[in-house]
Length: 115
Image 1 (cartoon, one colour):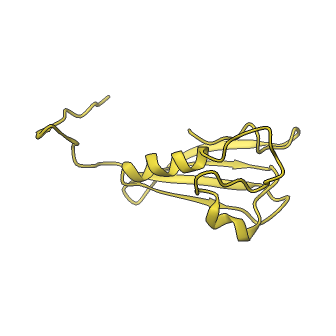
Image 2 (tube, rainbow, N blue to C red):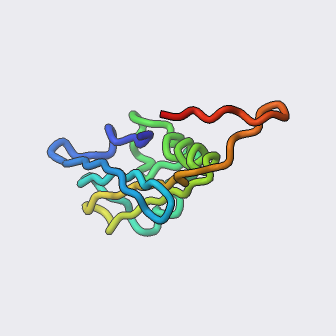
């Protein structure tokens, strides 16, 4: 997982992670009972350098979720954030296709790494 969970959960909070198969994809998710995200900010959390609390100057650069988004999109996946608002925690999830076309490297098909 590539979520910045360390700084976003309460001391007494709870973090769950999981995976599941969904429509030819694999979904990975992280749910926490942290500070939550205001609905007006949900659409911006994947922007570079965006912080939901600009008064926080110590932890983070605002790049973590933007990097996650670009990695997921590079693998033909989708990513999203959900929260019922401040004080209600958040759920971050991404889906990746179970099968993708082999990558092309220098005009040749790269070998698939498999189990």
